[in-house]
Length: 413
Ligand code: ADP
Image (cartoon, rainbow, N blue to C red; front, side, top):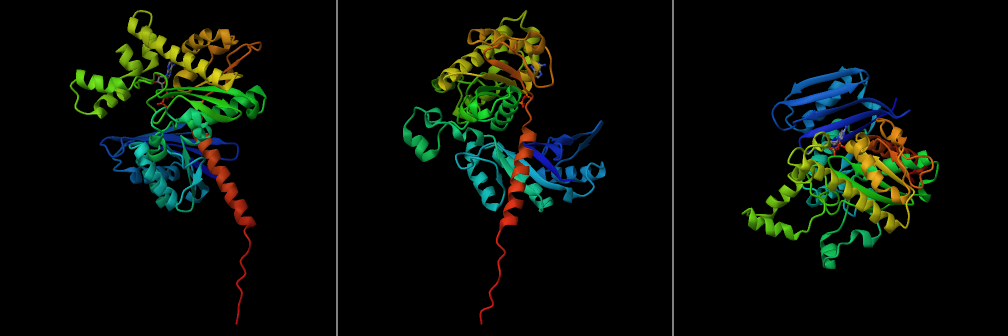
């Protein structure tokens, strides 16, 4: 039976999910961690079972080889030929990649050229792509970009108010991120709302360690809170979100730092919930302390205010709002934060269904049936979206091959 594997390769990790495409059933999922570092670990969940092992994973090629061997050894696949497609998450697709594409050497070169937009992630994604192409040369390899979904934004929503040549010559613009997640949850939302996505104005709130909001108008990304990089927008686990960039030179002087990347490192790694609270980057720890700790309370207040502010802005930009979606780690699991956000949005016509909001795990309306604007909790599934893109590309390829004219060689004398 045809199987598709979705891959998310980071600089030192490789996550995967293997799907049986008939019925979109998850056959196995797992994580290869600490690749290229000592004490690597392998975790694979399949059915009710779990496989765990420590292993030296020299590089991504070794991890991919181990993964495929284990799929056979654990009886998850009987033959590699069953894996007809491999979908790879790629972080930066620039303006070139407006949708998912089948990978060939030209595409690999392009992804490599876009490395300057994602210096850590694109090379890691490429390592995953190369490793699979070597070991499974007959499977269709597809690149799915975090940025592609946002390529539909109108120009005024992605051009920065800086000298135009910065954009024109160097590509300095808003690209956004989390596109695969936003694309998935709005499709589910439209299905749940029983309306065509093309007729809806939605705001997707992907609230994980990295967090972004996306205004989706008529099925297309209209605006999004992440920018040239994932640093901007709302407060995140350790990222600052929007700040006045003049802070960079000011703090360089104050902290006696010698290069801009040092300050930018702090904005990426020491800011956000962690920086404000001084407790943790994890919302669970902050929620646990917020009754007694003023800075934990402040971190939550800033987080909630940021989401509310962007929702207001996006509703105004779109000229209305039909639904707001919460997804990712915080959005899916914290009824407390969701309720705080929704209560502040009551004036828009959101009525919280407190009982539904207390549940977890499955997609659910968390607003009352009379709520003017719907609120939904939808678990994201980027891997499924990747697998579906692979399936679509494989089907299009088969169709094209069927339609291709048969070339008849002429035998001229
Ligand atoms: P990412 O994919 O960006 O790494 P996730 O979407 O997995 O992040 O979200 C991880 C975050 O979700 C954690 O850092 C934590 O803040 C938050 N989180 C997970 N479970 C809960 C919970 N029960 N309550 C509040 N926050 C939670």
